[in-house]
Amino acid sequence: MCGIFGIQFSEEKKNLGEILKKAAERLTYRGYDSVGFAAVDSRGKVDLRKDKGKVDEVYGKLKMGCMKGIRGIIQLRWATFGVPSKENAQPHLGCKGNLVSAHNGNIVNTLELIQELTEKGHIFKGENDGEALCHQVEDFTEQGYTLEEAVMRANRKMDGHYACVCTVRDINEIIAVKNGSSLFLGIGEDFICVSSDLPSILLYTRKYIPLMDGEFVVFNHKEFTIKSIENGDKIERQPLIYEDDINTADKGDFPHYMLKEIHEQDEHIKELVNFVKKNTEYQTYLKEMFESSRVFFVGAGSSYNAAVIGSFYLQNLTGKTVIISNAGEFIQRWGKVLKPEDSFLLISQSGETKDVMIVLDFLEKNGLKNIFSMVNVTGSSLHMRVLKRFPILSDLEIGVAATKTFTNQVVSFLTMAAVLSGNEKILDELLNLPEYVKILVEEYDSTTKELAKELLKFNSFIFLGYGISYGGVLEGALKVKELAYLPGEGFYSSEFKHGPLALIFEGQPVVFLSTKEDSRMTVSHINEIKVRGGKIFTIAPEDEKLRKESDVFYPLPTDFYYFIPILGVIFFQLLAYHMSVLKGENPDTPRNLSKSITVD
Ligand code: F6R
Image 1 (spheres, protein in one colour):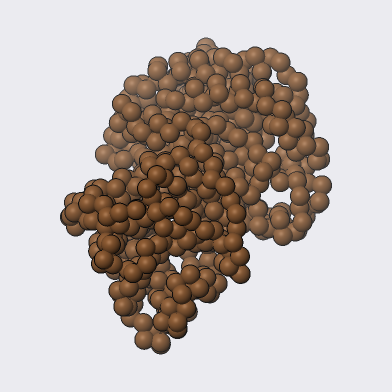
Image 2 (image 1 turned 120 degrees about the vertical axis):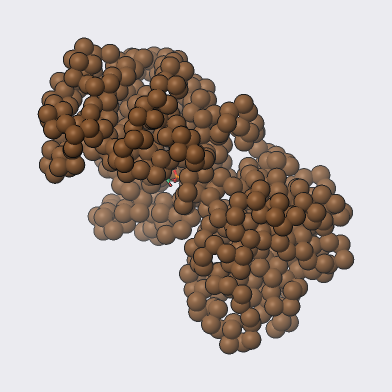
């Protein structure tokens, strides 16, 4: 959701435009509608080019490939304040053309700031919050403050969660601030850069520093200083080396990241299962988390759906009470009844989701101590702030729709439940799961394409699951909504007759996910729909009755009860992927969505 990047070299680069484009391409997965590059050359000339549109389109149209300079700033914008337009696109220039800056995130007191600065004579070209920030910094420099002091003062006036980057024409340095949105510093041989996230930095260097909220960094091509926004105190932090596989940021031979990420799930499952079995820290945190009589699992979107399945595993196998909550709803629903002994697991692929970070702020503010995290992105805000971590080891996930990270969240929950309950059968079976996933992906890649063609003839879909399958159909429905842009609703199958049954008409497609153990109940729910004309597609382990009652039956490669939601969702991921491609959409970047949702 918006992305910023800034880079300072030791000398003028004739191909700065190309360098910036590569970084911009790595930011696209976050979601965006406008693109802007600003280049500053060694004589202090600022070249700013920006517009709404995709990177290739804007880059070609504005001939950004010709941009030269010693430093550059880019921004990919996902509109919140002001419509997508050239004026609202970032970076912004101050009134004097001396200061250039960009931000990502939200500044909620923008209207007040614009009014105050306009009264002082600043001229605004759009309504964007980043423009307010730019003029506010400029205003302080005009009052005689150094750039650093102006940045600190301006940021203390901002109300919101964001990160920003700025530079002036005549000083060979860049300043960047982290205040609620992620920000990483990258340290290279002849440059230093800063970015909203790691993939764009990893293009150029593995040496990086995640910045923390309330900090800013001042850097040239070889030196950097991190300081507190509050008081300007220096903060010492050693660079880290990114050890994971960085090839995951490439599509390889696949047409889309999403398909690649679906295909590599077996490998990531293998890695995670082996890790959990051996890692003593993981086991220690697990015991500690479940010492509480109530454990809250909190996440959004797919991470919430993973928690639905995870809580089923844990309650079923260990008898412990797990309460699941959407992150956005948590404080309203549970805020008044939390107890010091409660445990909280915050689940987030990106580690940046604002709804989740607000929960973390709330728990910390209320002195609640037993906080754990399940996060994929190393160095993200959640990863840095909650150190009792349950890693999911999925490497970078570039496709906006969660696939391999969802799967490993669920696998992690199953491993937790198996370890806590000492269930050796599950631990042994988990070693076979990668093979089942591989078989499923190979067998069903083309079949799901056929099914996608058939389902696209309809305008809506119903996904039904009973017991352990429920979380799986919620995730299947979410995948179809976000990728095919069609209403797919997931329901608990026994709940369906209490109202939603009215949705059934002759030919309405209804997709069931079922375990073998639940087949009797599933058959009964299938019949309620069949007699009203619904067309039944069932995904389940081989089962004579289920096959007979369904219009189309897709057998899963195993009947192991605990794996059915995992395999079912992978089937749905393929289905949604093909629906998107068949509709001529790009499944990696569904409209209106972004990889990390850093707004309210
Ligand atoms: C769906 C999807 C979103 C995210 C949600 C939470 O495919 O990706 O629903 O799951 O925005 O994101 P994280 O897990 O990063 O907190």
